[in-house]
Image (cartoon, rainbow, N blue to C red; front, side, top):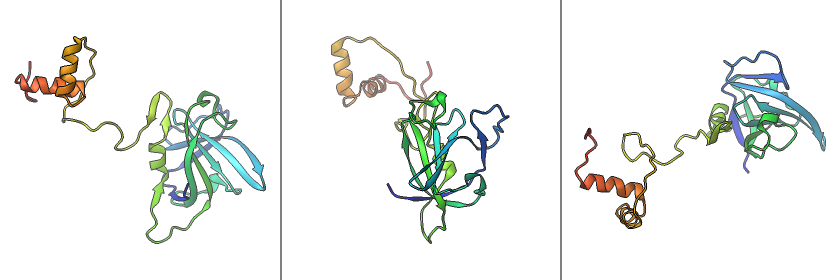
Length: 189
């Protein structure tokens, strides 16, 4: 897993967890401090993002996350966590999290590709949402018109015919049959 340089392009607010403190929802990233430990001389501080974001941040090598300013660059690894460790929020236990391990401040090299913190957050999973919000994810639109899913009951032979008409895709076969029957995109019932 290669190290990346992340640009801190949004402010970070850190509150103790569990917290009854008022959380500034206007802050783009609210992290709850969930603990710290030392492993082989490496002081680690753990943070979990406020609901609904499923994101863990580990500040390693004694890195003082609250002291990192907007516009700073940090050396990081980006990966996944299964959400079963002691540093996940109880409401998030057992759910897949994005995980960012921060190792220290970095000076980007000329031409180095920089990842922004906001882009990592945009692709992180959320409670109540399958997967993550990722640009370009999902099936491409077939037309400019929004598609709606329907459950239909068909005779087996008709379904087989529609599947062959749609190149092994029943929905595409239904659209092709409708087109052959005279349907056009500007057709209104």
